[in-house]
Image (cartoon, rainbow, N blue to C red; front, side, top):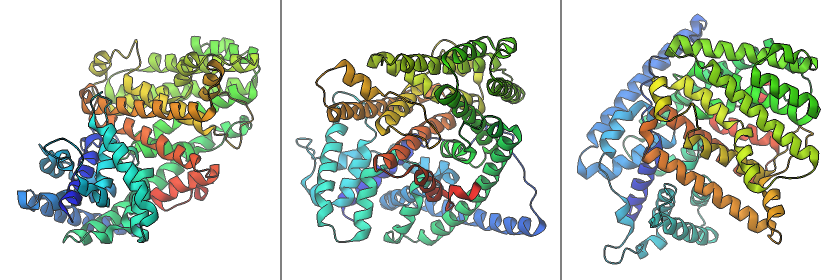
Length: 535
């Protein structure tokens, strides 16, 4: 590997580490315990013993690589661990190697600060530089804007001239799914295909560990999605509200993608329950209720008033009663585990969501789109992401009172909530995604801008929206790199994972992937199972 190539691996590793912050401490979480048969229990025990052996061997290899003469090889190894999604086993060892490590300077000339000419013909170096550019925080003098333009331009120019299919796939995946904006497990299988390109003594150990870890995670998530499906079926909401979506496995995928540490099994299941009601209530507003019914429903949620609900159709009564039950159960669990009862904050957040849905219903019923600013302000809330992140906050944070006070969460939504929600709203509007079970009509931010600014072409507006999404990613980077002390590391990492899931999901939409195949691809790429397995 050339010096530039080493710098490429080095900077890619640093990119990987920035927002994959410490999540080793699970803060004394309560977790589900399953009771397998004796055969499966013994098999699992043998696998666990073998995994522990491999983890110990990998730690020993990493420890030996702390010397300066093996620093570059250690970074290649860390990059592999992170891309395979198994770095959570080695947080302390990785931090020890990465501390005080500055590699970006190796891409530039010392004299004039321009990019080294050697980079133009060094594909690994260009890929590393492109990965580094994704950490852009939006400073006016940021060299990372220049780095992204430089590296992407030359990587694209190389594509027609590459004859090695492996290299073509590597460059394509780098441009489509840069590590910082992608879910590690979403890309792990592709990375594993190319893993034979690494010739370290640690290769076999890491490959075997990745296989065992993947088997363990796959088994765990299968149990979780079955648990979610059982909860959903027991609620009977799909039968009673047959106009609404009935997709618990797909809703679970969001929780699974965001909260990746195996320890947080109960938290993934609980978060999925909240997400399911966001979809359910969205369908009530989108395809079922009249404007008068929806107005009364939103008012009943705002007051949390059972008497008001009695005036509504049966399906709305059922939904409200189920929502009340789930909210109370969730709040009781948080109270027992954290000593804080979030019931009033959660109810207020559900009210905000319903009011945002109602505003949209009124806009579309009138046939008049709002201006772009009003649309986006409301659309951030109606995306459901602020409510989702609030639930996740209560599930993952330990010092809830002090953290809420530090972020003024009683009066305002944290910036990272707003950025992720904006990315979701704008990405959804760009994709103009239509779920197969939805018949409601939606406007979009693109439509609103084109109404506000006559003469703008759709292409111009879409490019502008993509730049807005890029700016929100820069804000997320600032929150992670500068203001990360505002929240716990595990919560920050899970927030960024939501943004990554959005990026990966809507990129598949942009490639015109059929709706059902998107979910199968996301699921299969991470766990080698099609989502239809759970239907």
